[in-house]
Amino acid sequence: MKIIEKGVLQKSEIFFHIPSEFAKKALYCLHDSGLFYCDDKYIVERNMYNNFLIMLIRKGTMTIKYRDQEFQVRKNTLVFLNCHEPHSYLANEDVFFEWFHFSGIACQPYFDFLFEKSGCIFSIENNIVIPECMDQILHMAEKGNINEHFVSMSIHKIMYELNEVSNESTDIQEKIILQAIAYIENHFHTEINLTELAQYVNLTAFHFSRVFKKYTGYSPYEYVLNFRINHAKQLLQNTNLSIKKISLTSGFNSDTHFITTFKKHTNLTPKQFREIQF
Image 1 (tube, rainbow, N blue to C red):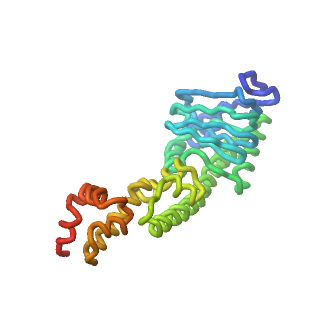
Image 2: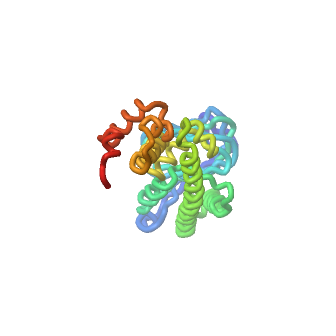
Image 3: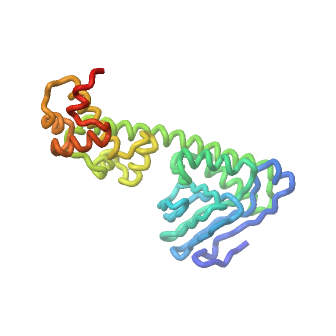
């Protein structure tokens, strides 16, 4: 079926399906789907839509807004949204994407599981299974000949593949964080800022901060500060260096700053800590 909507170009198509009662109870159910060619006037803003959405960007770039976050997505990116929550997406330029809305009793826990690991945006640059599943679902929808069991199996396969993509992404992110930590350990005695750390691992400052806290439990600033304080503790207990020398060696710009920060985090002055018997 052709669709007339602002920003949606004429060659776009939308397909509808009414799930059987059995599918509603036991399967992942397809509700509507489409092939959309859009220009930069295309925008969707919803407070709620009673389904889940999977979109595969085939061409161009889009902006996705979900849970107070904004994502820029490009070709070979898959978007998985829980449309029961407020969300919006818009085209930044001419785009082509495939999409479908679906439901099922396992949708919410599976979405929550994947969102906790990787959010709602997945790069599938090197994945061949997901595009193939999308093509099969949309081909059946276009023909109006839906095999509900096959569609359910294909949707489940897509989510299985997203989990695999998440695991690969997790491994990569872990390596990035370990790389950043090694940099901190080698440069903690000098000035380190967020921009410098993010550039070192080739991430934006925002993305780096989010990933770093996810893996360490601390912001980059907190991690650097804790490392400096712990280094100072070692020197206080194992050397006779002056407080001033320890402050500089540990990366603080003055002994006054060091003493104030140390007491704030330990409830002891450096001198009091030095006198403790362990």
